[in-house]
Length: 79
Image (tube, rainbow, N blue to C red):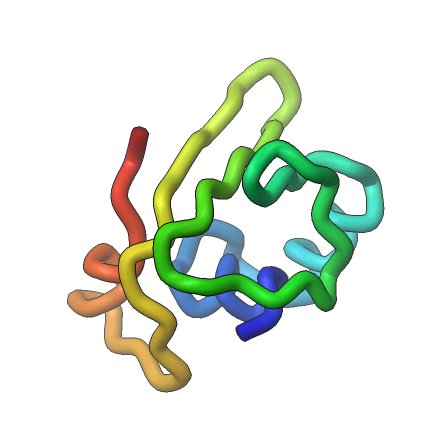
């Protein structure tokens, strides 16, 4: 699954276009490397997102195409 779609499905970022822009601006790292919007994720990857002064680091637990609000939290774990 593409990282921009994953960030939207996991409800980390509200819209896919915003997730795409964050990747293009270099604010998203996957396993320590800068991610492009089309970067393919797999289970166990570590994602770091820089929101201004805040940094969020998560581990990918599941890759789901169709997600409910309740199951979105099961897709990742905060580190």
